[in-house]
Image 1 (cartoon, each protein chain N blue to C red):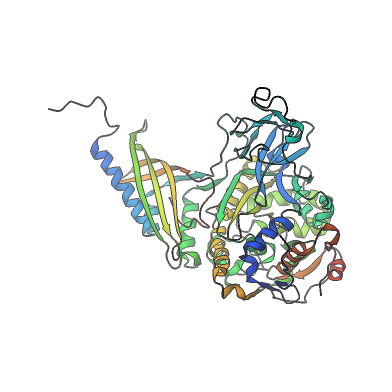
Image 2: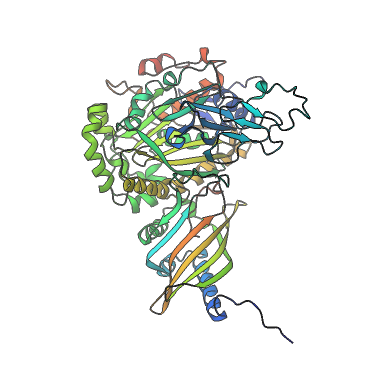
Length: 450
Length: 176
């Protein structure tokens, strides 16, 4: 398939996207190849597969993946498909296994991916099958960053640390704040939305604008800490109390800078806030004053391009698996510091479920909007139109300490523009060597397309 | 000529019919969004729990370590909070009102060791019409404890099993 030209479908200079990118099947297929086939994609958290033989079944794009902890504690990932006739190999969500046996003809694969057993190998295959040629198909690169395991289908993709670039400075606000690091808790919460996968990413990567309006109902009954950079009904906001950061290879963050509002939607925020204050000195000594005092504990949304979002405070960790241009599955877990007490971990898990779970009072406001933003594009006339993320254009600046392109406030559309810029770059680049790379303000500006 | 049955119902037919009426009334209140009346049917110490389903091989022993995520893990204050959210009229996805019907079936009623408490099993099938032709159907099994309180019988505990590995709707702005 020759590559579609998406150069006219997104315009970062005006914040414009053509609506066909949320609908077109060919564009979707190109996303599978160019984006999900070449970007680092989240596979699992270390805490989900701690022991040798522990495995977790997930997706990279639409490809089903088996992620397995090896004897030497390294992690391998494979297409979850039998190399004989293509059946699904493992059907369990997770577990521990020395080997996996296909339910079709009984081929058996060791948990390092080698084909170890073929029924009737002698009587029917006459010992002529070269088993070394039929091991599981591995994901080319697997690496981890501070507990988060990622995979990449492209052997030529840059190393994970380079891919994350300066976003690591922000990720560490959660992943490396406490000495023991983080863990994911709770079974996978899976919800299917009739939604294009880019819309929820766009939303949580930078859209503080919708919060005071789309979530007005729950905000009016469940807010226990005031967030000055947001307001119920969007009557007014103080943008000086929050920041948005983007221009880091598509990764981004929005954050309040008050050090506690992450727990604004807990009915009893005093418990998690006490945890924050008990440990704040530790975090300041590890991350410095700015991150320890102003970021840690704040309302924060972090996005790892293309499809991972983590919200410390609200404490959810989420990946969006595309299932066609008009469908995606959202997988959510609670992420906690290992140092938290079991009681606090349970409190956090319950609050994640109550706010952003399947019956979560915040999440249940978003699905309807994302759905309609997707399904409206079934109209041929409708999808000839453009949509815009053009709020506060040109207000970006370089910050002496915060990396990337910075704007003030949670209410803004800078990060969305950088998300679609990255989407377009990855959709257009022939290979990684021609892919723009930027992680600072100056680099982001210097690589901007004309 | 009738042969007497070698089996016996766990409770007498009056008790069974009383609980059937109660479950049907509850379903009607949920269909018509009369949530304050529904809250009044719950004891003050109600636990309303629905874990998130996960699929493991039958022989898998290594899944116990995973904390159960939940769809609902609510006591009365959290249920009342959800109701107060609906009452704000600011939940845009519920306007226009979604057409919802709770069908109750497979009712079994058992006495318990505690005086004045019954265990009631049931299935609820929820049919929910969203906008236009958008239709969702969900099935949940329920294990209830109902308790006599004064001249009422109130729901004290509801342990639910959601019959879908992946939630098939973008919101669950209702109760099961």
